[in-house]
Length: 247
Length: 247
Image 1 (cartoon, rainbow over the protein chains, first blue to last red):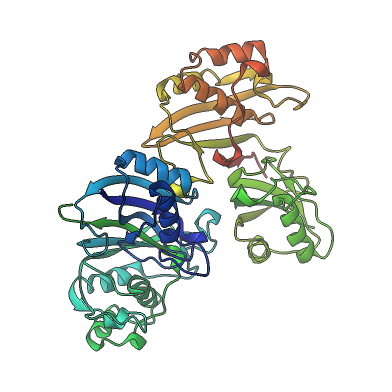
Image 2 (tube, rainbow over the protein chains, first blue to last red; image 1 turned 135 degrees about the vertical axis):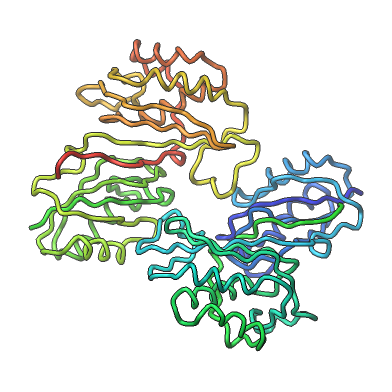
């Protein structure tokens, strides 16, 4: 009964998100169906990050245990033969029997892409937030840096997020520009519901001059969601990778 | 009655190609409808390259004449307000009254993208040809270089292409690899129907070891389509840019 760590990439455009739901195809649901066919019984798949509808992944990680003794290579090929082309298993490795993609994750890296030009590149329309007006990226970068370290991120959590603790440690939080593309990259030990998208919405408010960079410090201190900016749209967000200790 | 040169980008996935057709939405058709709304009368749009269904453009050029005296900036905004997000007007400039995007084009640059790895990146599924097996890119590059210069390209033309002359001058014809991505870029004074895709199919046959690089010389000399490789799929092809003299 081998347990696997599977690394996945997906274009989130056509899915209701990671989690199995009644209203449409989910990544978890597609994986569980493919694995049930392969293993001949119901298989439970756990994901490191429960990405929302429209959010993409370059390196999501899933865990599952199978009855059949298949090799990781056979598992990758069997999954890709059954999954739609918008979801791909990139690799698989065998892990210890109690490995759990979410509980064992030590860090996650997310990237958020903004297209900052008058006209949205048609090839970016599903993969970036289009903001045609001026953005002060230096101010956004200064604001982003205030998020590094251990903080209470309750102010950046979706209402109704309701986890036990809202403290998280952010290792890197940086904004950069390459031509029209403004990228926010954030790495941390964990993220609250809608946390990255709320951070981005707040950074964009700073970039538009609505608030000074220091405003993000106030949101952290007050831990008040109403002080943060709007939730940035899902299509700009990518789960880049997930880090683990020993498997 | 100003005449315009309009530069366009589009994701060809959801269209029947450049040319207006009865079986679905075309780029030309969408542009003509948007311009008819703007100008209040039927407008004819000419395109530099008549891209096939599924072929993309980064810098297609179209020409048209309007009754209304609009500025190029207003024209770009009016088009983008009416076009679907998969088609964008990038810029417009006023041209001389008899400017014609196709007849006045001096050169065109096309790019063809191949994803050469076991697993196709899900974000490349509409924008590259997936070839999982080994490809000898050095042999492909050698074969590509034989196409530079003035040649009769009848052997690389779709059957029924039927233009007056099949001689064309190719300025650059190069293959390069960056990781899993193999890119063919070709610039020339004109291209026959399916010419780039037939060249790519032939280069891939060389890369797979079916023929030596010199085979492309034989296809040129014999001018026989049956000696060339298969027509590569449309989704990997991009019209990059079109060059003109004085407007």
